[in-house]
Each structure stands twice: as C-alpha cells, then as structure tokens.
Amino acid sequence: MSHNLDRAALAEDQRRLRRMLDRTVGRVVREQAGAIPLVGQAEVSILDVACGACDEAETLSDFFRSLRGGEGAEGASPSTVLVGTDVRERELDEARARFGNAGGRSFEFFKGDASKLDSHRELRAAFDVLVFRHQNLYHGRALWMRIFEQSLHRLKDDGVLVLTSYFDREHELALQAFRSLGAEVVITERNAESRELATPGKSVDRHVAVLRKGGFGKI
Ligand SMILES: C[S@@+](CC[C@H](N)C(=O)[O-])C[C@H]1O[C@@H](n2cnc3c(N)ncnc32)[C@H](O)[C@@H]1O
Image (cartoon, rainbow, N blue to C red):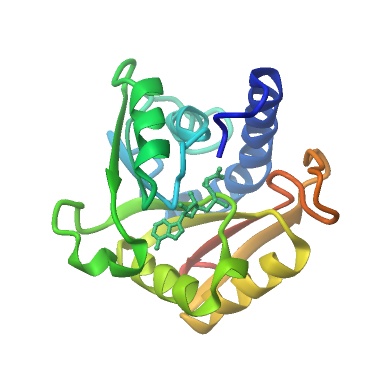
C-alpha cells in the first residue's frame, strides 16, 4: 500500500502512529499492567493480519519493545517477533526487503488467506498482540468477519488486539463485528493527527481501538 507513497509522508504517518499507540495501548498497559502478561515478558509476539507492505512493522515492534510495565518500571526491553500476513506477494516481498532482523526485533512475512488462518500450521498457535491496520470490512463483510474470527483464535486469551480504520462507519462496523465475536472494546479513539486522503472521509489511522478477549477488557 505504501510503495507509491512519498517517503516523508510515510515517515510522518509512522511518527503519528507511534504517538497514537502511546496514547491508547500505552494507557491500557498503564491501567491494566497486572492483567497484561506481555508486559515484562522476554519476548512479545505480534501477528499483523492483512499487513500489505507492512509500513508499520518497525513502529509496532519498537512500541512493544518500549513497554516495561508502566510509569518508572525498570527492566530490559523485550525482543519482538512480528509476523505479517497478506494475500499479496508483491507487497510482502517489499516488506521482506525492508525489514531485517536486528536489535531485538525479528520479522517474518508470509502469504496466506487470513480467512483460513486455522489451517496455517506454520504460524505459532497464539500471539500476544493481534494487529489490523486499516482493516478492510468495506471490501466484503462476510470475508472480513471470517478473517476477524479466525484471527481471534490466534490471540492469547490475555492478549491485546489493536485495530485501525480509514473510515468512521467502517470502524463502527468492525467494532460491532468484534463485539459479536466476544471481544471487548477497551478504548476507541478518533485520531486527531490522522492524515486526510483524497477520498472524502478517509484518512490514515483515522480511528484506533484497543480490544481484548471477553473478560479481560474492563478498565
Ligand atoms: C487496506 S489494506 C491494509 C494494508 C496495511 N495493513 C496498511 O495499513 O497499509 C488491506 C489489506 O488486506 C489484504 N487482504 C485482503 N483480503 C485478504 C485475505 N483474505 N487474507 C489476507 N489479507 C487480505 C489486502 O491484500 C490488503 O493488503
């Protein structure tokens, strides 16, 4: 999705994404630190579903490496394993060329239909973090319901789900979909820093939500 984008705009999007993660996921971690086992673990695993060229790979990894349990907490940064999956080989090749394993971060990208994640045996059973950046419910609700459902099977019971959307209504529909699958919305925010795109009502990371599986979501 990024290959034609101006690099400076892309870099600025990533800085904004990082601030948005600090405000939202960071807040959940500060307020629920005891109930989020990924904080304080030696390794944090992240599954980025429908990642495209995965512009967000390093931002996500660096953000989760920065979590050490809240204000003033000590300890070494965890390592991160980010697995990105998409149906588009060209975008995945671009991601493979851009992101190498170094500095406590590792990246893997594989081609696969996320509506059939249950049959992807090469994936680890469950991840600490599930990410949908610019989920695409508008491209087919039945397909994306299956993607959401199968992805939730790959999230640890006490893990964290991060979802962003381009459009207001698409975001609402995605939250409804996840609620119907038993997830709880912990935080949802309209991102004031979102970059407007040419299509009216569409902007980069326009909304972000943090969800957890039912029973782990209250703050
Ligand atoms: C709006 S793009 C978001 C890409 C990336 N996360 C971003 O923010 O730039 C939606 C992505 O969903 C992917 N996609 C569509 N159907 C899919 C499926 N069944 N399984 C996996 N990925 C799929 C598309 O190839 C596309 O890369």
